Length: 463
Image (cartoon, rainbow, N blue to C red; front, side, top):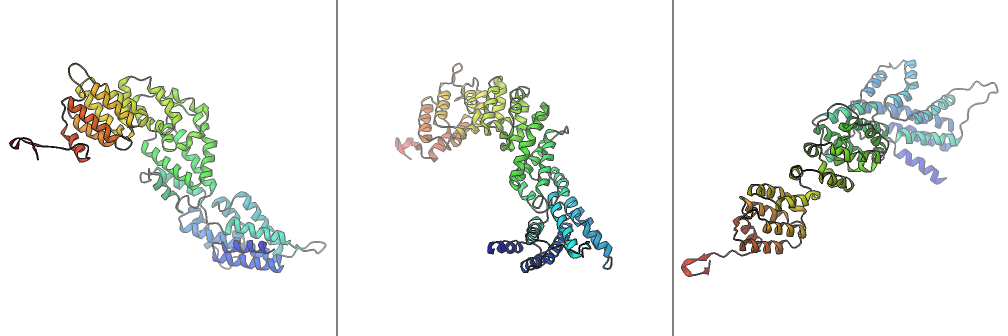
C-alpha cells in the first residue's frame, strides 16, 4: 500500500503546471479519504486546466492552431455559461485533433473520464434510485492516466510543426552540418516538443523529397535534408530507424535510375541506411555505375561512399577496373581515398614524361597520409627505376623537389620506418646525381641529415 501511494505522489510532483498540480493533489487527497466521486471530478478539472494552459503556451510559441483556439477561449464572456460548457465539451477535440497533445487512444480514455465526471457531478434519476459510485481502482486509474497522458508532459507540436520544419529545412540558412542541424531541430521551436507521429511524418516527407520527387534537387538542398535526417536520427532514433525499415527500400524499388542515383550521396551522408536496403535495391548498383560517366561518379561522391562502406567499395572497385586509364586517373585526382591508393602509386611510378610525372606527383601527395611502409618502398623503387629514353622522367621533372617534400610530410602519419626509408632514398638519389634543396632542408630540420658547408680557403674546415 505504501508503494501504491508513493507512486501517486511521485506523479503529482512531476506535473508541470502549478495550477493543474493543485487540482491533482486535491484529487489524490480525496481518493485517499474515500471521496471517490470528488476525486474523479477534481481529476477532470485538472485536465481542463492543463489543456488550457498548454493552449496558451503553444500560442505564445507561434502555433497558429493554438492561437485560433485561444481566441475562441478569450472570446467567451464571464457570464456566458453555455459558451464555457461548449468549450469544455470540445476541449479533448482541440487537444487531440488540432494540437495533438494526446493520441486518439488517450482521447478515448479521457472521454470516459469526462462522462464519469458528468455522472458524478449530477444526480442520476434512475428508476431504482441508485447513484453512481466509482470504485477506488477506477479513480486511481484515471489519476494515473491523466498524469501520464497530459499533466507531466510538455506541450508538443503536431501538424503545424511538419509544414514549418519542412519549409525551414529548404531555406538556405538551414545548416548542412549534422551537429548544427541537431541544435536547430532539437529546440522547442521545432522538434523538441513534437509528437512521435509528427517526427515520423516529417521523416517520410524528407525521404519522399529525395527519392520520389521529380523536381531537380541541388546538392546544397540535398545536404540540408541529409543533415536534418541526421538530427532526427538523434532526436528520435527508434522512429527514424522504423521509417527507414518500412519506407526506404520500397521508395528505391519504385525509383528510376535518375532518382536511384540519389541514394549514393544519401548513403555517403547517412551510412546507417545501408543496412536497411533490400538486395533488390543493392543488386541494381553495378548497372547503375555502368551508366554513370566519370563526371557523374565524381559529382555523386561515389568514391567517398565506397571508402566508407566496404561492401559498396568492392562493387565500385570492380567497376573501376573496367574503365580506361585516363578515366581512372580523373577519378583518382578528384579526391584522395585509401581504396584508390594503389592506382595513384601506379600512375605516378609509370609516368612516361616530365610533365606527366609532375602532374601525377601532385596527385599522389594527398594519398601519402594513407601510406604504410610497403607503399613508400614501392614508390621509392618506382621513382628510382623509372626510365623513358635516357632520363629518369620522375627525378628530372620540374618541381619534383616540392612534390617530394609534400610526400615526405604526408607520409609521416602512418609509415613506421619513415626516417629510415627516407634517409636511404635520399642517399640513393644523391648517388643518381639529383639535388633537391627543398627536400634537403626538411631532412636537415628533422635531423635525418646534417648540412656541412665547405670553406675553400681553409681547405675543408666545417663551417
